[in-house]
Image 1 (cartoon, rainbow, N blue to C red):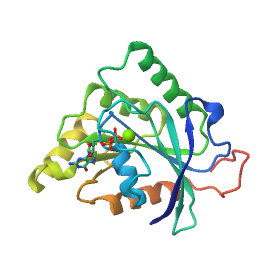
Image 2 (image 1 turned 120 degrees about the vertical axis):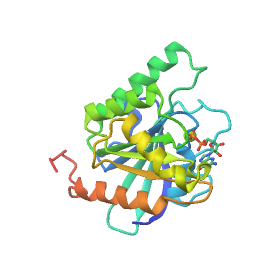
Image 3 (image 1 turned 180 degrees about the horizontal axis):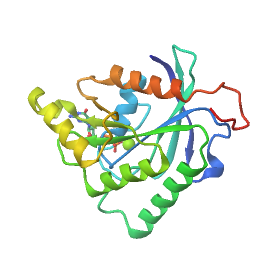
Length: 212
Ligand SMILES: Nc1nc2c(ncn2[C@@H]2O[C@H](COP(=O)(O)OP(=O)(O)O)[C@@H](O)[C@H]2O)c(=O)[nH]1
Ligand SMILES: [Mg+2]
């Protein structure tokens, strides 16, 4: 699958601002600074679609990107607000929790939430919590290890194994290594995304929330 066109269509703090239809969505979650915006730019082939931030913890909105592909599967990429930023206040992290819960529970088209973790580090407690949360909602199954350029080829397999075990991933869960810097891993990830979209596919235009 190749992304031909991508445009941001909604920047939302609450659910009444979300796009109204139930087009399929794949969301991206992870710690602030993990490389989420860079990955969205890599996947879409756009340099500045998602803002890459030097100072973490800025994005407090859910951003929806309308995606056109070379196949007959239009969908949205959804950029979820990052977590784990130390300077975020208690009330702000409560807001974050509410936003996530709201999004996960109301979106009929939501097929998967891809969790991003930094390939160099053991997943944090919050990463583990996040993946458990995704398991609870049945949205787990795909993890991306970012900044793959930061480790050697040898270390790659070792780090993947470590991440798998820390997140208690199922044997058939996918973990894809990407580097936005070296532009690697995007084709493999797009294949995984295509499989997700095709497995969950119901006819586009079936707006009454019919079961897949
Ligand atoms: N070396 C390297 N740095 C990256 C990569 N992806 C992102 N970064 C850097 O990590 C920082 C945070 O990236 P950003 O995409 O804004 O992360 P976000 O907060 O998760 O959206 C920026 O300084 C990026 O340049 C990567 O694949 N390799
Ligand atoms: Mg970002």
